[in-house]
Amino acid sequence: MASPAVASARQRVVVLPFAGKQAGAAQRAIRDALRGRAEVETVAASSMFSAAKRLGYSRRDLRDGVTLSLVAAEVQVDAIVKGHITSKGRTAYLHLKVFNGGDGGSLGGHKVRLRRGRADKATARAAGRRLMSFIRRGRWQPTGEDEDDPDEGRRADGRDDWRPPRTPVDRFEGSSSERLGASEADLVGLAPAP
Image (cartoon, rainbow, N blue to C red; front, side, top):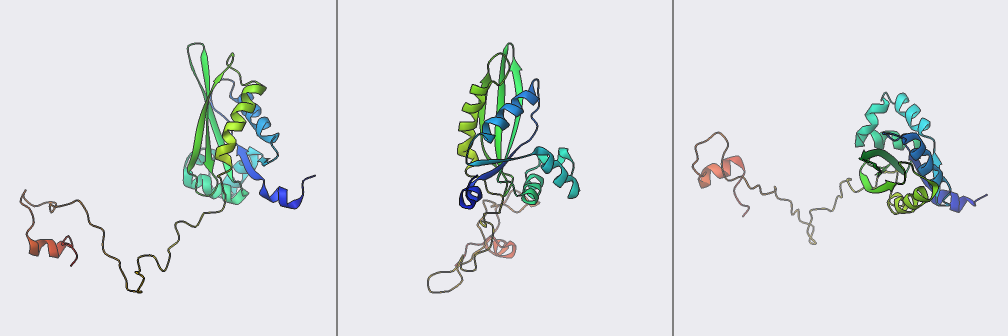
């Protein structure tokens, strides 16, 4: 049994059902490969689906990053692994993508060539090792980067340094092809700051 400190450092990961031919076997192989790693705690995909249903979303809604992050926060999942299998001729590929549980954004992806169209244990272990570099960056709690900093935009002397952003627009929409004069630019807020 792992100590509480080690258990809390483990990344909670869910492997959602894959799409394509032999997708179920590939999903189980990847899930089992991740389950065998000490730093990962796998969560059943059914818990994501039941949380989505409780929040009023369908399985199909989990394609959207915002919905994915809301459901991941409900289940407290750090990373979500999605995948699909494509084939071209006799060659099959497993496309894997890892999403952050905090914001639903992509953490990275990996493409694996499947031997005989199946994900064997060796291939799944190699893919699991590659996915770990992405999974380690996943956090179900929002990172706080979007929160407003009260001191942002202030200079060292405490004065407010905020100015409206300059836009590349140098023409007033709906007017003729003439450039705006200085007085007209002042009216629409495009004049340079003094």
